[in-house]
Length: 209
Ligand SMILES: [Fe+2]
Image (tube, helix red, strand yellow):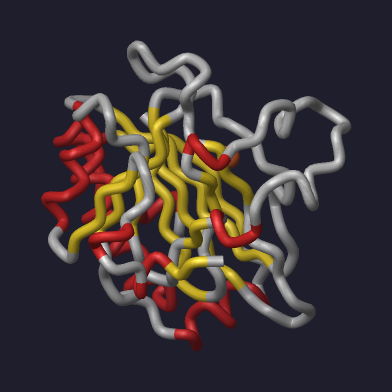
């Protein structure tokens, strides 16, 4: 398994662009790019991640870009979550600006076990993901996806090369193209939730357009 943060640029995976400036996310507009990663440290401390897990934080709603602060406050109330709201403001604002949309779907989930442990492709145009604590999402570059891997019911373990699995680090912001991005059917990013060891806590945010 390869940690995206330690991946030398020369060995970047096919379809991946990664830099430490947020502007890299706009590169997702380019056809060959399937995964764009803004490499940054998590702005949320581990204590808040633990608190979110203790409270089993789970929020799902629609953020109106005209009232971003208000809709985030309503989705994620509480003084303790102010740092998370601040980062959501930034990320949702970036999504709206990048894709010219008036609203963004948000999901905030505290997890102690994998949400989608099987490799799959999302049937959406594009999704932003950020894991604030714990292991990040895993994905396979297209040339490393063996035929038949995604067939329902097929045992996936052992069918792909373990060293081809890419993994996001805590804090990194990724855009994953899905199957319904223009001219992308059959090419959406093959990804899954990371295996989680007992007691390991994750706080995951996804934003959809
Ligand atoms: Fe997914």
